Image (cartoon, rainbow, N blue to C red; front, side):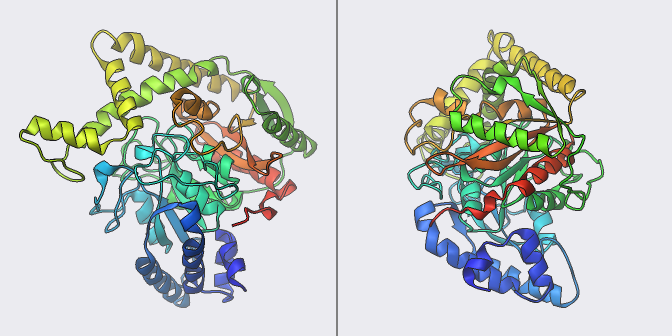
Length: 487
């Protein structure tokens, strides 16, 4: 095999070839590190690359395999969004206020990857504290879309999505608070899965909004999404919000048979502002699933128009509380001053970027006396109505389809000074986080400029297998993976 063939392998393809003795983890890891060296100067997906540690883990994985061990992730290079704590590796959350911070422990999902023999290749760029839709809010640099280096990769998991699309890792983990896995997956032409709230441990995930955050996966195909989700899901004594429900073998249960599956198409997604090519690609995908035997009908989620304003009250409110801990006293960046109060102000004033400050102020205001009932409490009541809409819809259908994003990737700098337009990039993904259900983005075509389009497949709470089944069936009918960015 050539180096080009190595870097294009999926998790399941790499595992099969390593089991057959056709490739070693050391060879695969070297190929990925060479790919990062060759492309990341242009893409800028990584904040930290860990070549020495990765090669050590690759050698250990080859030894484990030689001793007879088998595992779906054994020896596979995986990238991690830099909001996941990693023992001995800097973790910045894309912020100056955590510059130089090295956690003394691994997040639960990272520990599980290591236990499975995965090779941790590096930490990927992110909007600061995962607050953004373009990865331009990183305090360090903007990540670029591998399909067009003048465009954004989406966000906030834009570094992870770009790394997967550029073959600069085999797969990656991200986090999704309002679309931060699915939106960049759509813009970069990869698969992105946000699990149900409580399906995957958040222990060691740097918090943005604790009732909305969820660790997700970004992969080259649907099978890999199933494999990686199975590896990180499950109960955790360190996180009381995780359920102890059994974790299915998602990959083993994949089938391309969707005969009789009830598919709902979200009426409210097809609105003014939706790029015509995105709309056409989604309807083509829906029609194809109908031809494969699925039962297709339209469904209504009447309160979906209120998801964006509700989200931008609830999420900033939780962020204002979570980010209060960054004060320069115990860890991270610190600005000296003549008084303790002055040190707090200078540290937070210089350590946080503009978008993070905007959300802290908005959240603090909505929680303040006299405004709590009018804003935050009302937003939580709207959240309940949005969840009720999904509950009612899932009594009639098994999954709900629609576009992942209203447009394909936009230009770097195009929306950075217009927060409202930037927030609208997540208009189709926010409601799933508010409802606590699962969602998946799978590539469904390209626009006339050659930019990827994503189809969103939404399942009920703990209905990941349903979403994976429909996405897998569609993927088998259209092999969009054959088309790759030219780097």
